[in-house]
Each structure stands twice: as C-alpha cells, then as structure tokens.
Image (tube, rainbow, N blue to C red; front, side):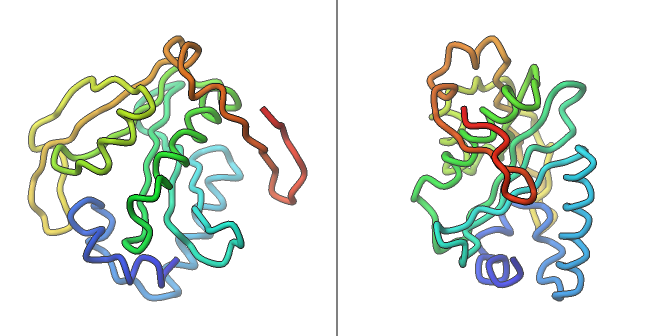
Length: 182
C-alpha cells in the first residue's frame, strides 16, 4: 500500500484529501490497516484493496463508507497512477453497488467526486447513478484549495432496474469460504 500510494502521490494529491498526510511511514500505514480491519470486522466501514489477478500488485483501494446517513453508504476509490484508464474504478464501483444493495441491503449509495475530476465522474455516469447536486467550495484538495463537490446517487428502486444488478460476483469471508455467488 505504501509503495502504491508513494508512486502515485502527485496524481492523488489534487483529488484525495487524505493525500495531504502523505507520504506516511510504514508504521503509520500498518496502524491504518489495523484500524480498517477492525472497522470492517465490526461492520462500521468497509475498505478493500484492488489487486492484480495474482494479488501481487496493489492497483488501488475502494470502500463502502459511512457518512451519507442511515441505511446509506458512499463508494470511494483511488487508482494507482500506473493503472489508470483500465476500468478498475468502474469495475470495483459496480461490484460494491451490488454488494451494497444485495448484501448490506442499503436504500441509497452515493459516489462523490470533485467537479474537475472527469475520470472519476465517468464512473457513476457509466453505472447509471444520478447527478444530484454540486456543492460549491465544499471540499479541500491536498493543497488546501477549495473545490466543488459532486454528489451522484442511486436508490434501491433504481438499482432493481439497472443492468449493474446482473453482474455475477463470488463473495468470500475472511478465511476464504464462499458467502454467496450472485
């Protein structure tokens, strides 16, 4: 994770507020992973790594995050600068949309991005999310500059009529046991 973030730092800083604390040392990363793991196990927040098929390279990270309110989550994602424009963010957002509605039984999922991050905007557009609002000067970049924040949403009833629901996923628990294939 540290290597992937470090080599992508200049790419991430304009978009990811957390990048202002980078580069972090390895111990800080280990502690962050422990926190993520604890939150995941408690059902508080879900952070996932995005890996190549051999699981030897971290391509990015994604998550189903709390914040938008009760019975709702936000999908967040970042992709390593060496793996852009290969569909990874769209693929993971599609999978997490399905997980959110079918496993977590959410009523609403949001994807948020800045109004000048066109790559990121393409993800919710491709998946059929609706652009609900653009909030002016709502978010800071890693340099402390204010920027507009776009909110894209999908409700359960929209999902039920969306081709995203038809993708096939194999879902496994912590030790590799199949939870569900749907």
